[in-house]
Amino acid sequence: MRIVLLTAWFFDYTIQLANSLSKIRNSEVYLYMPSNTHKILGDSWKNSVDKDIHLTVYGTEKTGLLGYLALPKTILYLIGNILKLNPDIIHVQESGSIAITAILPFISKYPIVTTNHDVKPHLGLDKGIWGIYREIMRKIATRYSKMIFVHGTYLKDLAIDYLHLLPEKVQVIPIGEQDVLPFKKFINEDMNAPSNEKTILFFGRIHEYKGLKYLIEAEPIISREIPNIKIVIAGIGEDFRKYEDMMINKQNFIVHNYHIPYDEGAQLIQKAKLIVLPYVDASQSGVIPIAYGFKKPVVVTNVGSIPEIVDNGITGYIVPPRDPVALGNAIIKMLKNEELLQEMGENAYDKLKRDLSWERISKITVEAYHRACNELSPITRHENW
Image 1 (cartoon, one colour):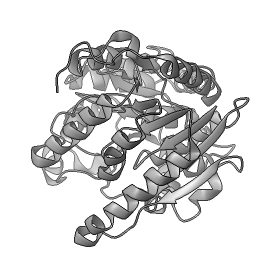
Image 2: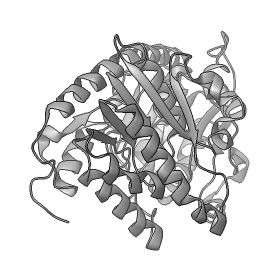
Image 3: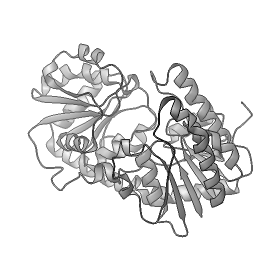
Image 4: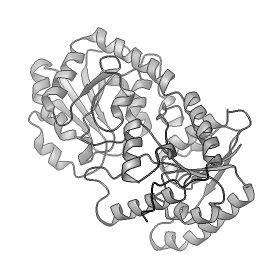
């Protein structure tokens, strides 16, 4: 099977998917990555792409007017390349790129599938013109897709309802382990070495839907029981001043409010006792597989498809959203029991290698490709364009 993987973002995810698909018998993988990939994955990112993969870097790094003027050339380049390949399937990672969206009508004679990492906009995100733009791009990609992939059963139900899709046209693909350049090389043998530091970590983008305010509100509850607690907040997003104003005991917080390089992120995860995801709205989270890879348990909220990859009481705890008391108590329970932390960390790693392995994901994906290639019926329940 000749597979084209086409993305404008979700770079590490797409590379990992390509690497796993290339190991499937009789698979020929063509990976298209944008020219700005190095800004996210670093200058040596191509080293993470398996040698059997046919890699093409497309587009320009020009921004503003010059970037828009270069779009026609990029669009024609992509169309010409893909038509020459005559692929069996084209897999798009959540189209939000003008270039990728523009080529879909011209390559639609081939089966197209799209992974929607987010089925609909998150709370407080994608507002205004940008939100409208993202929604239009999502609907166009859906229109030209034979099948939509999502990262959980909750998201499948949401896609069926929100995008008016037929159930058989939505395939659940688990989110995979972090098994490529960024974090893997920083994992070492002492990643679970005993430590007296009582450190918990909030890691990733900082926006309203991430629920950081509830972790901040939980701090007085936690610090009453764990006097030497340190809550590390690492990431960038909206204006952080409002979160600083919420902090009662500022000395218990360590804030890294900037884009976190992969090596620094790995160090923060290694030092943490557990990772906290207090989200109030979610699709799925790549933070959880990263935590599992470092043998770190998690405390998460019961939103989106996040609970589908957390075994409550085994790999971490699941608590209600917007509940700082429940959040704080779960964290306290774990921090007071080093043996429990160690056991949950080992369970998390086992789950990662079993349920979220790329070998399993690639098999599910290829099976879905074959179904998409044989499908002639429309993807939607009714025309809603």
